[in-house]
Picture 1 (cartoon, rainbow, N blue to C red):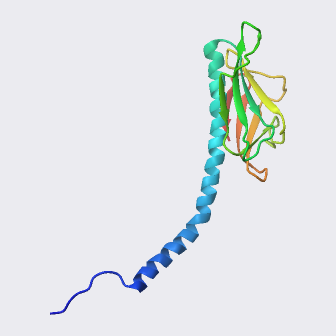
Picture 2 (picture 1 turned 180 degrees about the vertical axis):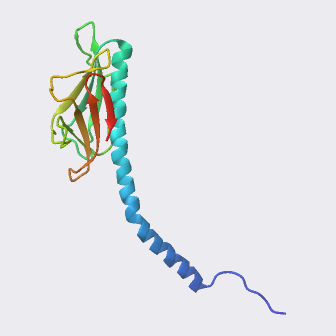
Picture 3 (picture 1 turned 60 degrees about the vertical axis):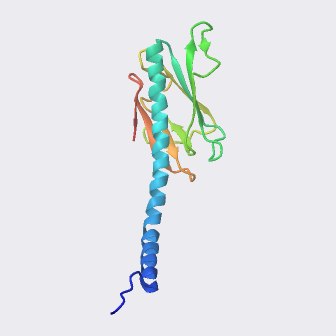
Amino acid sequence: MKQVESGFSLIELLMVIALLAIMSAIALPSYIVWTKSVVYKNASHEILSLMRDTRSRAISNNREAKLEIDLRNQSKDDPSTCRIYLWDLGTSDWGVTPAQTATLSKVGVLTSDNASGLCGSVGTTESIVFRPNGSIRTSVSTPKKYFCVVDETGARRKHVMIDSFATGRATIE
């Protein structure tokens, strides 16, 4: 009677490990690019969500609401901070305590008023004031405003655009 041995030989096991290593080496660069793009996409969605929330607060409270994005000292270790303020009817000034505070993903954010979307304003605090009817109060003559999400080299990856000051509509491009 012949005894049958079952299992894998060392050669078979090494071949499977080698194939897994090759497949991982092929997939890893694509995975890294994908994870970075998800970070940029999430940051642009955070900005869009904050804009929509601020607009909604202005409409529901029937008073102006301001979204303030702090672009000073932003880095991977110190990301941009966003604050939403409501107009205080009692003092006729912006409330001292923000109604909401959020921190953006660890990416850079720049602003622009031009249609080319070339973002370059950094080191400032950018404010958008929504009126009670949902429109935006502005002194800028251009009809659009851009908030660009940039990578560590400063290259624009995504941008959030307010495409109508009359309606306060914002989209991601």
